[in-house]
Image (tube, rainbow, N blue to C red; front, side, top):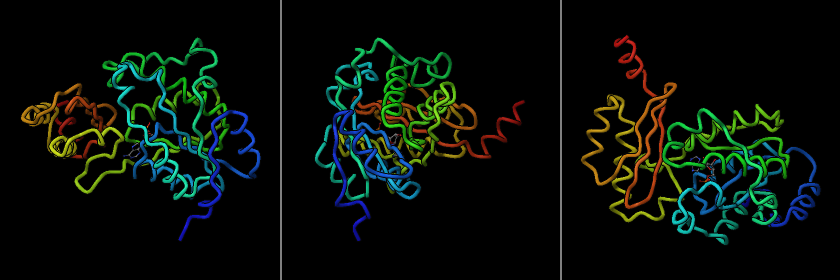
Length: 271
Ligand code: AMP
């Protein structure tokens, strides 16, 4: 059965068209910001938004200010027609492809920076990334003024930074955290996976498996990952969660898992 909004989805680009499309509907709006190359992980956020709101907005914008590496930006997959089809099939009300010149009419003179968590984990390896991300998320949310916004736990550090920003700036939009969507082998779906070879996918799955292994210490995890064809950016535990970032075939992948009770009791016994 086609979802309720399947045939009606509106595709907009300009802020004027976005405002007209938003004001054409009554009731709450759920908002799912993305960078496109959409997959089942994004679809899980859209489905949740559709189940909790009468209207759903999804944006697709490859935000240049959050790419510290210009080659990474250039190679980021762009699949506009397939993205439109996925959003339409999942019942999205409005698909928004923002225009760079409108979002960045200030030429990035104004920025949102955070001074603590943004320097940890991915922040150490991607200078400026979180400033670009927070700035564009605030712009998108202020332009759309949704009731709820949906972020994936896949990018857990991003989720926590957005949570803090919304609180710090009294933004009334409710933040909804969505679980990580994984393939049958436990690999977190990512737009970047599309750039891996079959061998690279196997390595990425081994990384996901080792990160989830309940008995690994950080040291034993590192030792087992060193046998694989990848380079490690970081492996760290914070607030009962294990975070990892690796590079496989030049593609940077991140993942995280809640620490098991086994890890917690190991830590306690060391105190
Ligand atoms: P991106 O297009 O990578 O910027 O992701 C857009 C949103 O989808 C972010 O909130 C991500 O955390 C979320 N997301 C991406 N992949 C997954 C996944 N495998 N499971 C859950 N959420 C995801």
